[in-house]
Amino acid sequence: MYKPVKDGIDKSAKFVSYIEEQPQDHLRELVHCYWELKTTNPLPEDFRYHVLPDACVNILLNQMDRDVAAITAIHTTATVLNLGKSFHYIGVQLLPGVWRGNPAEIRNDYVAESYTGTLSLNDLNQELAGLDFFAQQSPLSNFLEKLQHEGLIAANEVTAEILRSIDAIRSVADMATVTKLSSRQLQRILKETTGFSPHDFLKVLRVQQSFKQDYLTYYADQSHFIHSFRKITGYTPTKYAKKFDV
Image 1: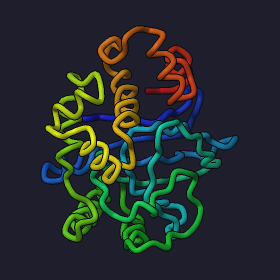
Image 2: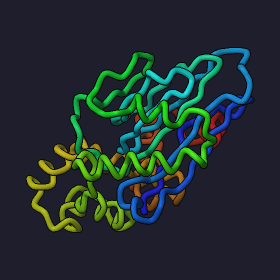
Image 3: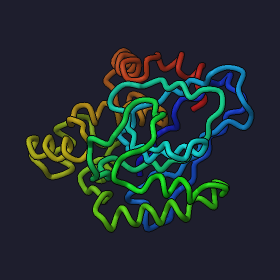
Image 4: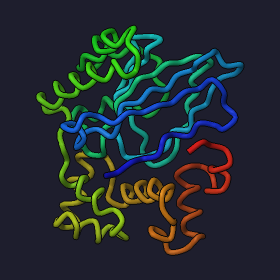
């Protein structure tokens, strides 16, 4: 199954904790992980979080200001978010194509405003208050089951098949073949369920997979890999590995 890498935390950063946990078995076709990002002590300067594209949608909950919550995603290039000197976020990372709610709710920037959408994110945020990360997973699971019942998240067989077959996919044509769809059908379904064109979806998945396997599995040569990696992350592979803990 697809396992996107965690976002970039500068190796020099102190007092910043990131942990993630797998969901229960019955939610694994929907959810990659539950995650927590927080400071363990106030930082001497603002923390800049380097968020990578991964084609996932996140449910984001700010535990330091429980009116603040959002549905978030990054498209095809990395985004740097200034989180300040103290922060505590809880989140759910949905697998690509799982989010079926209003696409207009999805944010791709720093979220500081109170949530005013249709989901009960504020109530959920209050329910999580005072619980440690592992105790929070039960109410998070209950919330996801409610979203599933309402049709706001659902398994996506097209993206699931692409993710299962990613090592054998070299082109958009291969993607159409493994999903048994025409190029036009693939274009329409991916755009509707992920917001990505097949070409952009493949670019993001390739960079994500390159963190775990030899880049020649996905790229014609080193030059192609470096160009694609830098375009999406903002760094060459060597500079990214030196700067961020991955």
